[in-house]
Length: 230
Image 1: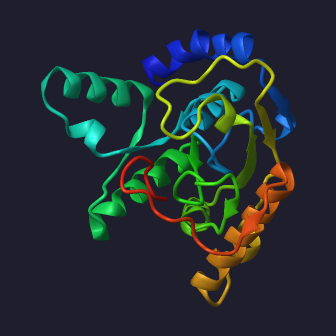
Image 2: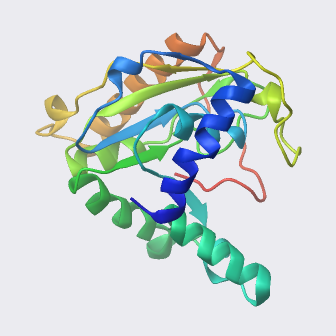
């Protein structure tokens, strides 16, 4: 486990549990070992903090390539931080470069690691749950690992879009883990794209059942900056 992530599990995670007192449901679905993908709704930057504090293992999160290539003291800080946390860089230029994050996540999963993916591709602009992009399904099929649906409730209240730091509002956040979705039944599908779409829709339905969000059958509008697309 990366050093900084280990430090965070011993310091930041207990602080979050003590200060914000999040409710955790479905913890029995968190795997004790082996590779898996956590696929959740995305309401706030704080989603990663609360997910990481609820899972006692290292999770590889995605981060913009900018954090890995910056210069000067701030660049050094972010490069060190991202490396210490074991983050996966996402290239924003598209094409083959954008797929490098996907490629980097496969060995992490095959070696028994955990990866977090937000199928909506960006934070919800209005609290609704938008149609999922199929990257989560393609990643699960390529690595042959299950997808664990995650429902975040209340994170947008403690850290709304545009707010730099989370507000201390105990008892506002609930993290729900759903039953793992095994993708083996789709491995031999005649159409890979159809299988990916079916898996993704199954995942989004499971997330919606966990959160109770209104579902929107179109993709969320892309942000000009901020979250990495998956």
